[in-house]
Amino acid sequence: MAASCYITFPTIYNAIRAENLLEEQGYPFKMVPVPRSISSSCGTALRCDCRDLASVRNILVQNELELEGFYKLEETGLKKPRIEELFFDE
Image 1 (cartoon, rainbow, N blue to C red):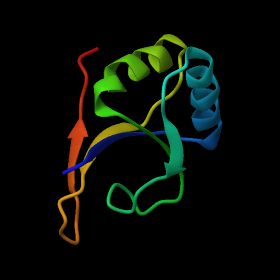
Image 2: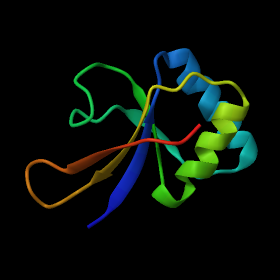
Image 3: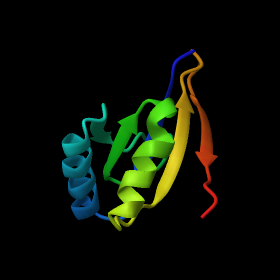
Image 4: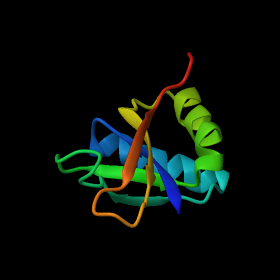
């Protein structure tokens, strides 16, 4: 089954800054609405290949972006996808 990783942000401002930074670096990503399975709040998330997540996170952290959460969402073919909240050592 396909899995994608998502980064959520506390504000749209941080999401837009992330988008600009990653475009400059040439990383493949897509800005999407936060999946309902992650949060019922409105907002924008960055979706990327899970293999790129650590590198993308490092770029955002180095540029002092405020990040909210990291998630791996795997489509299972069932009603609810499998969600894993990811944590990084500082």
